[in-house]
Amino acid sequence: MILVALFGIILASVGLYGVNALQNASVFSTRDVAEREPRTLYVTGSGLASAEPNLAKVSLGVYTEAPNANDAVKQNAVKMNRVIDALRVSGISNESLETRYYTLSSVIDYNAKPPQVVGYRVSNVITVSVYELTTVGQVIDAAVKAGANEVQGIAFILTEDQAQELKLTALKNAGEDAQTKASTLAASLGVEIVGILKIVEGSTYYPLYRTEVKDIQNAYTPIIPGDVQISATIQVTYLIQ
Image 1: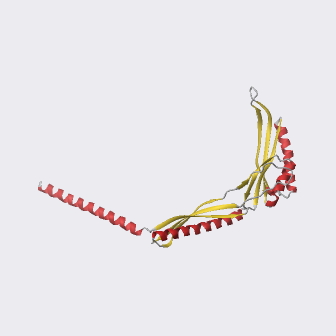
Image 2 (image 1 turned 90 degrees about the vertical axis):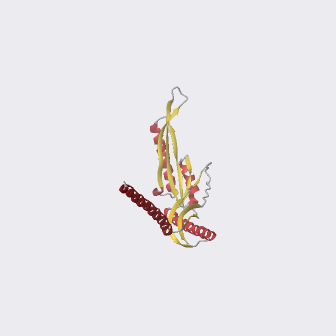
Image 3 (image 1 turned 45 degrees about the vertical axis):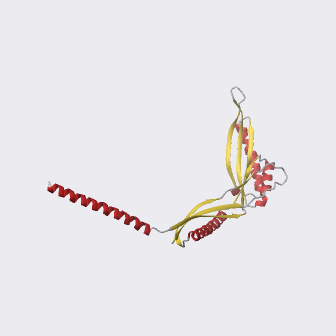
C-alpha cells in the first residue's frame, strides 16, 4: 500500500510538471511567433487612364421574310452581297468584315387555331471594323442605302496595342494611389514604412463605349465617339516599424 501511494505521488508530480512545461512552451511559442511575424500595412490602390478610341465595331445586317425558307435565304443573300459590295467601295477590307450571327426561323401566326407557320425569317448580321472613325457615319449610310435594314449599334474600342499601353498607365496610377494612401495612414498611425512585402495586381476594367444608331436617313449620319477609360487596382502589403 505504501509503495502504491508513493507511485501515485510520483505520477502526479510528473503530470503537473508536464502541464507546466506545455503551458510555458505555449507562451514562449506564441511570443516567439509574434516577434518573428513582420508588422504590415495593407492598402488597395486604384488608377484610371483614358484615351480616344481608335477602332469602331459597327453591327449591321439584313433582315428578310418570305413565304418559304428558300426564298427568304435567297433574298437575304442578294441584299447582303449588295451591302458588302457597298462597304468595300467605302474602303472596308475583307479582313474588317466578319459574320456576327446568321439565323433562319419560322414565322408563326398564333392567332390561327391551331397556330400555323406562315413564313420564314432570315437575319444576317455582320460586324464591320472601322479604323477611320471620321468615316463611321458614311459607312453606315452606304450600308443602309445598299439594303441593310438592321443597325444594332457601335462599340468604340481600342486596338490591342493601345489597350495594353493604357492598362499599364492605369496600373502605374494605381501604384501611386497605393503609395499615397500608405504614407497617409503610416503618418496618422505613427509608424514608418520600411519596405514592401507583397504586391498583387487586382482587376482591370475595360468597358465598351456603345452608341445606339436610330432614325438613319440618307443624309450623313453624325457619329461622335467618347473617350475609352480603363480602371485598374492593385493590393500592396507594406512593411512597417
